[in-house]
Length: 88
Image (cartoon, rainbow, N blue to C red; front, side, top):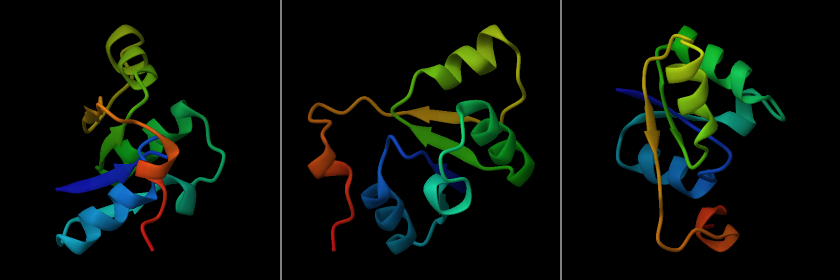
C-alpha cells in the first residue's frame, strides 16, 4: 500500500508511517499549496491512498465522481497543531 498524507493530517503521521515501513509521501513535500483536486489527481496517478482530516475529498469522489485510489478520513479526538507537527 502507498499513502499520500495530506497537510491536514500532519507531518508527524507521515513520519510514523515511514518508520513502520510504509511507502508514504507528504503532500507538502511534493505539492506545496496544492488544492484538493490537484492532490486527488496526484494520488490517483501515483496509486496512493490519501490520508486526510479533510472531508472535501469525499465530496470530490462521491458527489463529483472523480477517480480515486482511496481515502482514509481521520477524525481524531484531539486534533490540534501540536499533534500534527513534526515530532523531532
